[in-house]
Length: 282
Image (cartoon, rainbow, N blue to C red):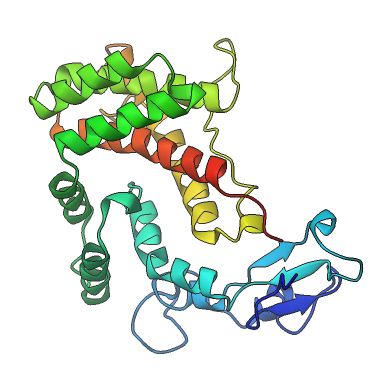
């Protein structure tokens, strides 16, 4: 079984090597520093992901004796494709947003990267792209699909359908609270959280490396962080779980806010689909 593509570094132990993060970190610029290539962009928006190691600890049960303990997939094709969206993901995290990549076409992604390069990319542009791409029919279809396939969505189909209808009818005072409650319920089911347990994000982060789905690992980390901000309940923020569901604020009823919650629920569906339909490769 050829488990290691030609363009990966094989590491037999967990010790430092010339290409390991421990050695190279002393020469890397900081994330917010200018990139070493003199592009004029911040390092995190330029070569950060190209320089980043992707060390995968091998599941030795899947391979014959003598298989290396770790493989660096930094230059593997599955990691190279991850770099296309990585700068946009980081821009979103810096601007209190999350990159709902399944809503974007390749043309949308290319356009966003061009705007990032020339400094004109905004959170509003990304939200407007999501508005343009997500139709009523698509949102309803994906919700129905999730409810039929995943236990965490089971029994929520009528509520989610009504919330989607309310959103596309412009009734955001109705859609946003319903979607907030359902998103929390779904994530509690995903993480097997009891309702007495303090809520926390529950999308898995540790299963993607061995499936070589590095983009999903990055997305899971960013998504969990975004969900934390939506649910942490600061009173000076009009759009979060506590201020909306506890009636603290009444100025949450915007198309953007309602759309974001629909996209969050559909993003959970995406993670669950890949978890169910992929398996460890190394």
